[in-house]
Amino acid sequence: MRKSIQVDGDIHISLAGEDAEDWTLQAPRVEGYVIGRSDPDSEYAPDIDLTPHHGLDYGISRRHAALVAYRGVVHVVDLGSMNGTYINGERLSVNSAYPLHEGDRLSIANLDLLII
Image (cartoon, rainbow, N blue to C red; front, side, top):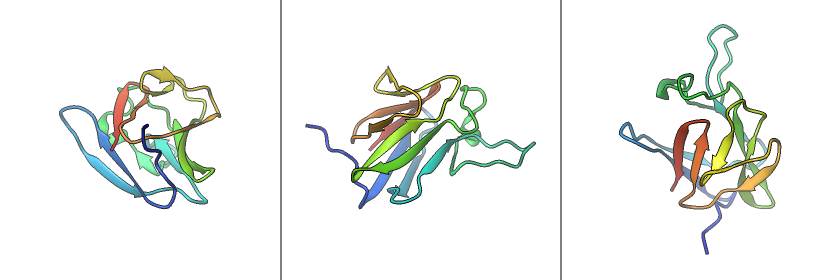
């Protein structure tokens, strides 16, 4: 059984591929984290900004997905992105919460992140 990411700990995320970079975030409790790319024209910047990782080239929306707390577990929600959000290759329905587990491959459009 895969271990769910609990809201009372941290989330460890690794950028898959050659330019691997790791992030450690406090799991969302009340507020979530928006994942996306910044927009210099509107001065918008998401909580987790994938612009430095070629977010535009990978098809990432400005407000692509969110990490949220739901029933004590960290979930991901697609925010109506153009190119979709995937967990282990399965496309998520828009505005529905899906639990994250250690070892999941979270794809934000065409950019793969590993939940470690």
